[in-house]
Amino acid sequence: MKEQSKSVEILEKIMRIGIYVLIFTFPLFFLPFQNALALNKHFFLTGASIILSLLWAIKMVVAKKMTIKKTPFDLPLFAILVSFVLSTIFSQNTSTSIIGLSGSLHWNLMEFISLYLLYYVIVSNLKNPREVTTSFLSFIVSAFVVSIINLLSYFSVIEPSFITSGPFNPVVSPTNLMIVNIIALVLGAKLFIDYLKEVNGQPKLAAVQNEKATKTENKVFLMAFGFSLFAIVTLLTVFLTSPFTVKTANKLTKVTYPSETTLALSPTWNIALDTFQNVP
Image (cartoon, rainbow, N blue to C red; front, side):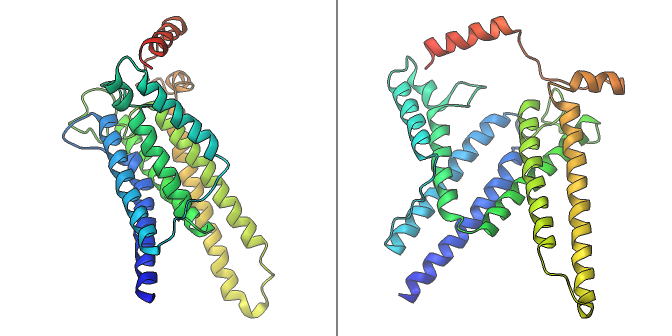
């Protein structure tokens, strides 16, 4: 019984580390010998979901207990999964529905199943607030590193040889970068505010505990400095690269930063209708 419990604990620890590594690595992941960044991330996500799902299944077999945490999103996610499966069955191009088109690998059956499995792996195996906070921090640090890399590339401090046009962006597009940074900024603000509330909620320290009070103040200062630096870098990245602000950035700096090319509304709508009708 003790050996079984120990095996389950080891598997749980491996899975937690795997989840943290996945959350940190996914925005940054690329292969330096080719520039198909979306393809790289697509197969990385699929491989990670398979490995973590297998570990989860092994853990349940060893523990002789199936544990799947219920959430408010269970029914909506299942409905979306059913719609993906049905659209694949009735699709005129089944392979495209399963793995996507070349250059556009998002919103296909394989990707959604990977995300669906990862969702339940994560919510069922991160059991306490500290583990959830660690997963948030993994994403925040990853977003910060992505922003630094992108800014260095924009200002030509680094110029990867495998990128033939535009600055290097590990998350593929300026829009993706904006979304990642905004989510990371919101999560970072939440964690920082929660920490300040925790500190303020502590009882006032007595005079004999001045040393402890000083350590707490130093920690608050470091947290504030870290969050401020993170906020400045992410907001600067969003301002310089976001499709909504890049024109303003060009005017203020008098430098033409690379921007994401978009179609006009009419052809975009026609393409969307044609895709919906012919490539379900």
